[in-house]
Image (cartoon, rainbow over the protein chains, first blue to last red):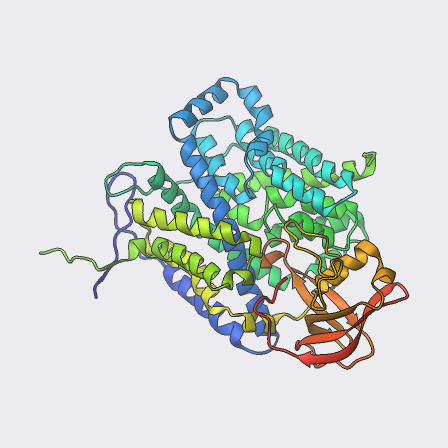
Length: 323
Length: 212
């Protein structure tokens, strides 16, 4: 049996990929995550926790990434381009509505990424793209419903998640840097035709490895940062909020489910709300995906805006809201 | 020089394996190590979509992309219920778990038999109070986390977000920490706490679904 390594094809002409360490590193990671869980004792238990969390994060995110890639491919079609042109002609309206577009997109936060990229590629304004990235995950109807179910009888938490989220989205729209195109060439098919399936496959090719690496990083950090460490700071609300935001960043759990996790944690209203708002906007997994699409500078600038914005607005909500 | 006709093309390896891998995990029930049962149809659709992309799209993956994409498949295949169950230690403190989306019937509240889960007991107590459950005969499975406590991890959506729920077992001797047990006994409301007074404690192998 012959195994031939085909060169990865760039956008314009065939090119031979430079030798990469990544396959060897992936093999090493596989060896560690397969062998170490079989050891007895705390190391084996921790390695198993990393392996389980890693696979579950990938399995849970993959369907939504696929749907996001499909929607992004549709936006690249004729009807989608017309829609984008209309939005570009009304930049202020587009910027105002972008955070609310999550209502029509019941996707996990990672499914938003390919659509955000398509908006950027379609020439949408910085405000619209950043507002979409920061607002759409929290106006997602499944996220709203899951928050309602997880916090029965707590309208303040449900409303707070949406209102604070929209406030953070407005600040991100105004202050976060413009998303740059990361220098990643698009693979194309043998015949050079884009096509819907090829576009979706190219999106998955581009984001799949980043999702896997982000999930691995999140699962590894989570195993060494027990939840009890973060919740032990809950007595001091501001410190507790910072700790819970760090936990949300590391845990990188799906926005459909994080309300139930937040409800189960022994912390006060402010740390809980901070956890609920930051997670869908900015976590380790998302940071990796956006770094690939928008560049490291954008991720740093976006994080520098949303993290303090969440803290300040969540504090204001829990202090002054009537609920 | 004649071209060598490839028999296996690495460029299609990851897409060709991921779809069938996901499908096989659902067929053999391994998906329940990672996600809740209601997610299975989503995985089936995803598997079929990935298979379609592998067959019909012309895009090929580089060796780097292939290696990284196959990593979760390889790791997932290597994990078994026994291995996962053995590693659950309850190091996180007990969580206050709420009713989840897609929650099935509560076997304690529906009086659907003796075999119930720790989650059923915890949620039932929260709903109707310990006094209403006093004297109810139950049989629960969990792993021992302390001298007189058993636990079970509960997923909200996937194993990465799983949090432990616990039940105190008072008046019986439990095996060493980490042992999976089936405890048969009666629920008792003792002060502010709901406890399980055991009649029998039996060590069991890890259940096929270590996570609830």
